[in-house]
Image (cartoon, rainbow, N blue to C red; front, side):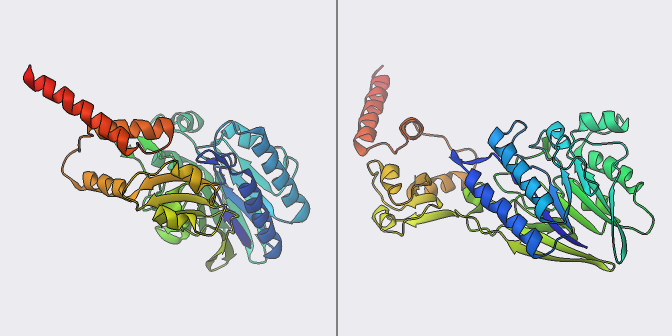
Length: 378
């Protein structure tokens, strides 16, 4: 049986204030294209379909159109869960496939965790869809007041699901969690608790033939090759610049899972450019999301406005000397103090969207010096 595993679509999300609706439309089209071209049997979406519990109506319509096309243009079953960004009620109520028999859409944890059971020439395969759940909700669902951590939530879900798997069936688990050993980026919403981020041990999934995970945005395996994050289809921050995004295609055989990735082809890349401002302006015009690190020593006038003439989607601009200064502060012992000039410079950047001019810095320095001299005299 062939499975396409994806997750963390985050429909409705923006990239530093810029709409990603067109980017998402292209990505959804590429998922559909792979479903058809590779004759996929089951589409798995492991949570965070939307970026927030109340997504824009345009994003809801966009996803409904996608699901409708999946139903009309493919033979694929659909297994989908909610993630920590989603409204569980909204995902549970997705109505496009409500009358279909080969669909398992789960937004809210259930004490039974009944699977979707499919069959291929090698026998039965049970798909258990375990939506993200907070501890307070899991305590009520499973009637267990001792549930007090994410690992205990998933353990309760797995125990309930395991009881429903037919004898001899292969088992696919779909979950949305932070599994121990996973590499986290800056754009994931940490599942934090008092004392830090609490993870789920990979051995909680013992007995599963494939575990389709969502939450971490980098494609990766954790604990074993068959326990895998597909990663997000799009990059959502400059820490992901240059990372290849992909969907995971799994051929589930009697003897195990054969796994490969199919790269996404985003219409706009996320790139970080470093160099002299004049050199960057001479670069090839691009609609990519751009972060510019300028090596110029002196502040420039309206650099972002001028940069956007070449790169309309330039989102962030900084000076290399500031980056180096920040690194020095991090490497130094203790917490480095912010000087008054740095504080005022940060204020100018936030309010005016540019670096303070040299003349402004000089005036501030002069006033500070005069004030300090006055204090010494008193």
